[in-house]
Amino acid sequence: MPKAAPTLRQRKIFALTRILGGLVAACYLGYVVIANLAGGVPFDSKLMFTALVAAAGFGYAAWYLRDLSAVAHEEREQGVNGNGGAKG
Image 1 (cartoon, helix red, strand yellow):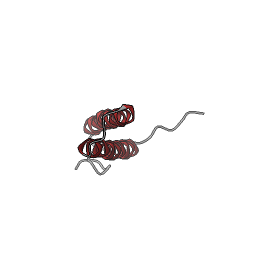
Image 2 (image 1 turned 45 degrees about the horizontal axis):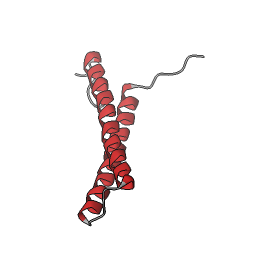
Image 3 (image 1 turned 90 degrees about the horizontal axis):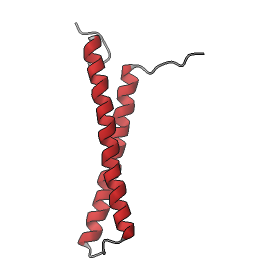
């Protein structure tokens, strides 16, 4: 039985959700690292790991930004406007 492929709108929402989640997590963890460094906490292995996870969060968001760009490109090729309807 073939699997149903997600629509462009579903792919767009999925990508936007992942981008937003990645950015929120990365910004929060980045804030934690900066606040700890400003508070005089040494940049030890725990803080380094937190900074690494924050960088991974930005990378995660960037990866799905590429996916969102691909969805937008497919929409342009199919002649679909941003609301899921045909151009007219």
